[in-house]
Amino acid sequence: MAKYQIIGQNGSHIVEVTGRPEWALLQLAEAGLKGCTPIDNPAPRWSGYVHVLRGLGVDIETITERHTGPFPGNHARYVLHVVILRVEDADAA
View 1 (cartoon, one colour):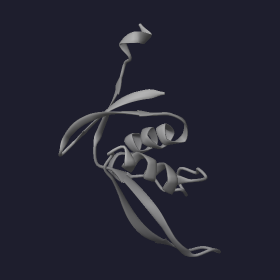
View 2 (tube, rainbow, N blue to C red; view 1 turned 60 degrees about the horizontal axis):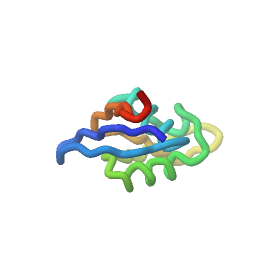
View 3 (cartoon, one colour; view 1 turned 180 degrees about the vertical axis):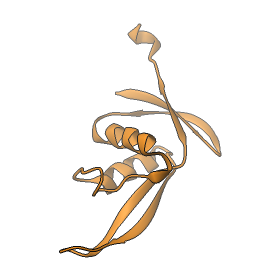
View 4 (cartoon, rainbow, N blue to C red; view 1 turned 180 degrees about the horizontal axis):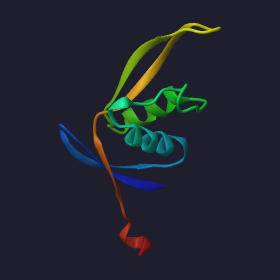
């Protein structure tokens, strides 16, 4: 489990995440304002990862986009609106 400092408009706090939610948080941070979509960053449950992160107080915007092709419809683009910093655990040293 990794700890991250979440810095946003309403201050900052520490969260602990692991597994796919941590992966999603790092993908969102790397993507910046471009954001991530399940099309560009394939994973089975993007909406679930975002739900977990939002529950931890991480500000993530959902933008609904149309797509065409053989299976036209909508998809979500997730955009992180906070800065994240990895917090080193003092006990790990």
